[in-house]
Image (cartoon, rainbow, N blue to C red; front, side, top):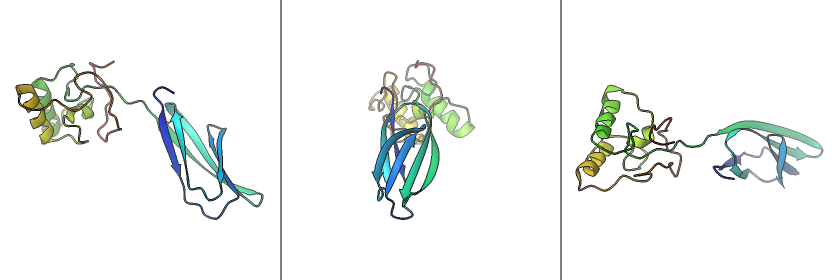
Length: 163
């Protein structure tokens, strides 16, 4: 499934069971051994999903449910904090304004120029070195729009240059 994600369910068995059944959105996905303590649901499409884990033993059953919302990551260009599609001096300036003056930024992931999962002064220096030469290019996605390979902690709500 294009743009799908994996969902890992895990639990601590309260007792030995005869079997465990996993449901997503009311549809049975799998029946597991009673000693199981987890299940990987691969390729789940974006959206809100309801999971139910039902454990059975000696004719009795007990269920637990949880909801999971999967969202598609927003495409962005790393180091393009202002979302205009290019890395120039305005991007590290905006980063400093965000960090010290609280100016709103639609895509914090774009401020993470070196791709280490954090947005801080080292990213400003990294961007300046890339703008004025001598420094490496920002980490992917750069220079074109793309998504973070792993969902980063910073988030990205909007990046105007990326559809």
